[in-house]
Image (cartoon, rainbow, N blue to C red):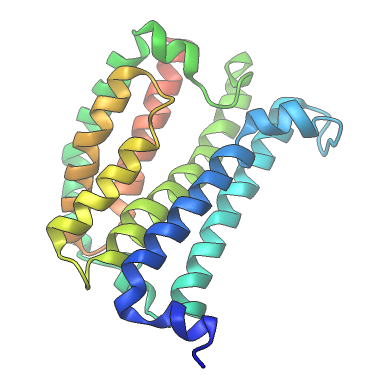
Length: 232
C-alpha cells in the first residue's frame, strides 16, 4: 500500500500537490499571517509595548514560518535540491545587471502608485509605521521577509514545482494565475499590473536561474511605494 509520503514524492502527481498545497498555504498565510490579524485578535500579547512593532514582529514571524514550511516540503518531502526551486545562486551577473537596470523603473512605479488614493488607502500593510522614520526602517526590514515569502511561494515553489511535468510556459502561466489572484483585494491598478509582473518576473527567474533578483526588485518597489506614501 502506497504511503502518503510516497504519494507526495510521486513526480507525476507533483503539479497537483504543488498547486493544492501552495493554494492552501497561501490561504492560511493571507488570513492569519498579516499585521491586521495581530491587531484584531492578538494585540493583548505584547513583546515591545508598541503595537506597531509587535504587529510587524508577528508579520515577520508568519512570513518566515511560510518560508520554513516551503523549504521543508522541497527538501524533506519532495527530496529535491533547493536550486531546483530557484533557491540556488543562479547566474549572478545576469541577476545583478537586471537589478541595476530595473531599480530606477520600480522606484518610479512606486512613486506613481503612491499618488493614487487607492494605494494610499491600502498601504502600508502595517498601519502606523508612517508615524516615524525609525518605525519605517523597522517596516523596511519586515518587508524583506514578506517579499522573500511571496517569491519563494510563487516564483519558487509553484513555478518550479510544476515546470518539470508541464512546461516552462505552463509553469509561468500557473504561477501568474496564482499570484494575480492573490492581488484581488489590492487596488485595481496593482491587480492588473500583477499579471504583467507574474509573466515578466517568471521569465526573469527562469533566465537567471534563481529568484533573488526578483525578490530584491519586489522589495525595492514595496519600499519606494511605502516611503512615498508615508513621507512623500
